[in-house]
Image 1 (cartoon, chains in turn yellow, green):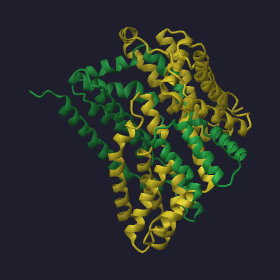
Image 2 (tube, rainbow over the protein chains, first blue to last red):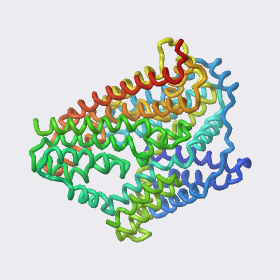
Image 3 (cartoon, rainbow over the protein chains, first blue to last red):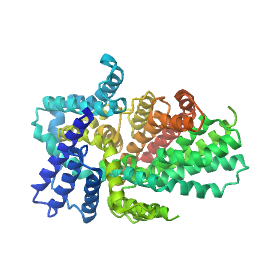
Image 4 (cartoon, rainbow over the protein chains, first blue to last red):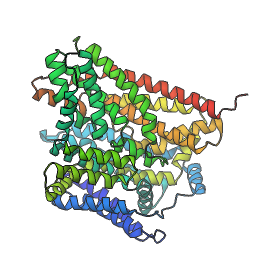
Length: 317
Length: 224
């Protein structure tokens, strides 16, 4: 068991607590469904490392079915305004300490875990450093919070239940979309799209090729929800053969700006759920596309900028 | 062509506002079947990718801390702090956050920020409070608009900052892909060319936040 597995266990316990508190919530006529939803999600973290993939797949599909049936209205109440005002008056700026400890300890922890290698061996795998540091930062911030606020530990669990219920099933959406991306990849969706785009470009025109690559990156990211998924497909289909090989463009510039052109797509698609749909739920916006709507002007402007930058830079260096 | 059926399901399902989890599962199953995979194979791939992407959920681990602080008045204190800064406006609060977010991300400190740990408990309440101090109680429409801009500012700062850092996922992906294709490059050669876009993104978003302030003034300000 790795350190990261241990942190997933903590996350599993947090969702299990949400399931337990919902199970006891008689104010919600569908409390069994809501409790089951969080229980299934908790199971994927508590046992995910050891369960066969087929079983985890069944758990995830079960969650989607429950969410489709509807989870009812959670009985977790907002903390009262009197309580919040009293807390702010009592604790003042000390309230910021635990909140700021999270990013601070994460950053310091990441640097430490990446660079401190006793006996030439890193404490955790390098790619896991930030994730492990985030887990540690939460433990530190929680301890500081419990001490500063003088609250019993159970309060942190009732409060996390309130927040996961407020965000709802969207909590699991980023992960499910990553799954969709994986299925798209093994099914060859990317090749079909690249082939379609490739058929309609006048390859002799430098401008047309650059536009096709940049727009293609943005459009394909829009569909896949992820510029990382779009990049290999569009670059193998258009970027490398047409911009670099046919017209002699610079590979580094093509790659760097091409990826950034894809980010315009990320800003404009509900499929990039962790950036667009999750914050809308987290900030309790009535419109789940509220964040996307304010990002569209910036996304489009940057797509134009990136296409122009590519056109003027890629053949010059 | 049939493999594109999943894309169609996603577009249609999201447009019709069906439950997104159900839409995604349906799209994945349909795509897999269209590509000739069997049902057990699809569910297995499903579970494998679901477990592999568990890291995406780790950010939720911050919720016990954030929830407990909220219960004890974190948002109220953030608002009180902003009320003491006379020059604070919604746009300026978000501009400052944009600069901090983009600069730290460009140094590889992408964990400094985020919607759950920073935007919900601190940035959005501060941006809202700055408008409240000037214009009084905000209509819900404006309150939600400000929150949406707070979330967008976090995204834009992160996306166009992190690509300047040489050891970030996207730069390494570009490098790995071009290496394989026979174009060996250093991460620095790639990250360098993210700088023009980063500057453009910063300027465009600063301009949009300046316009947000103007819009709030126009819609809420009772000019004498």
